[in-house]
Image (cartoon, rainbow, N blue to C red; front, side):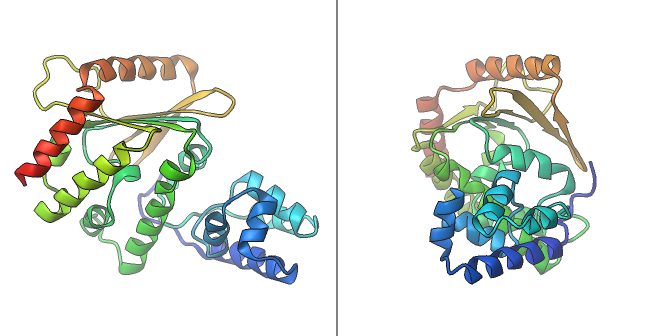
Length: 272
């Protein structure tokens, strides 16, 4: 739990500069280094630029590839901040990056993994207390980095249940909404992504207690995450997670099917 403002990235930038310096000293390009640590060159760049919190696997492989001195492992132990992500969200974001299944139900806004830059910046510029330009940029960079998951993890199953009202609100205006719908429809074409719309008029609804996220780890353990105005709750208790799984399963049956959801989005897009 904690404040929602993006945190300082000084420690991440220092760690990233250290990785870059050791990599260049070893005479490795980002692509070559990425092959050694089994991460994409884009991930390597994000870590080196201080935009991404390196997970334990990256740190261990990087340290081994760059001399196995233990320096990177020790430096990583002092990393406590991630730019652009709220304090309470960092642990979930790290789990999200390696999950094999991700379910999201949203009734307030379009979830971050599906947002366009224009839509996201509308949200950032309307936050209270206000964010400065650097904080807004950090938030967008972090969100854009997270969105790589949809395409860089094709074996991860993504499911989104979105309330029809989040599109009808037209956050940011007609042009932003039109681009947003196009973006969601494009994401829905991916084989690992399923988007369902919960219609505005629905007599029965299992998700009235609010938004939720569920994920399955590579070890087939399930976790849940629920977020409110100024904090988030990571749920690990198997009984509580099971309750949320049942609710999500019911909502999948109550929402429009995939094809009907796509047709509804296309109709809303055409009405703008």
